[in-house]
Image 1 (spheres, rainbow, N blue to C red):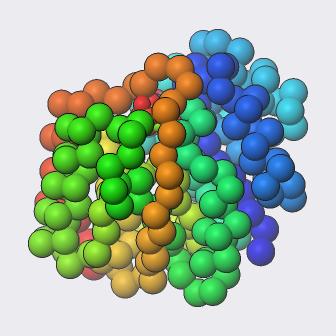
Image 2: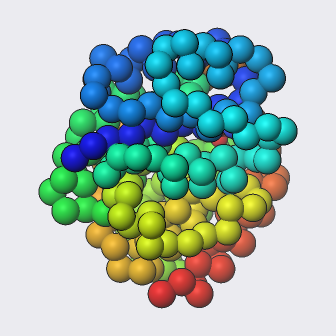
Length: 219
Ligand SMILES: Nc1nc2c(ncn2[C@@H]2O[C@H](COP(=O)(O)OP(=O)(O)OP(=O)(O)O)[C@@H](O)[C@H]2O)c(=O)[nH]1
Ligand SMILES: [Mg+2]
């Protein structure tokens, strides 16, 4: 199975070379795709390291970038992760194997226990969102917001979500679950980020709850 590692990037010049180097060591054959909305040197660094770079500028936000990052992948499996050094690239082969074994989506959870790199409020919020999703949809997950996942590309081609507004990872998990696709979840370690966060707590919380509620319509 051909693998694409897709990342979306906005001003990650401090992390991008390290993250790409780490991915290459683990999955040398994989296509590395970036959907980039940076003002800094991130896209030049990635292109000089042989990655495929799609520019989305001016920035349209996380959702439109992530939607493109999974839809434009040329692999049979698309692995996503943030380009900020928070996610363990060593887990990529395990995620790909789980797709090969018949899963359509492999989610990772950062909050099987509280990671040191995550503020306690974020940890509690993540657990509360997951509990709400479990009550409304029956899904057994602890992390609706993980940026590290593997998706079967043929599944992506069959599902739609609304790319506008924050918290798209919620829909990218709940809609395939409701549509009956096979989903697995594995725990991962989560590290301190290089560079500054783009997370807006208030709008992210609001949109998370909206998306959990709206996903009831998917079947
Ligand atoms: N192309 C593009 N990338 C974005 C945009 N917003 C965020 N990103 C990237 O999306 C990824 C996730 O953003 P982060 O700032 O790490 O947000 P987060 O993971 O929720 O928060 P942290 O816990 O601080 O890592 C990073 O690789 C960002 O560079 C955007 O508007 N366009
Ligand atoms: Mg991040």
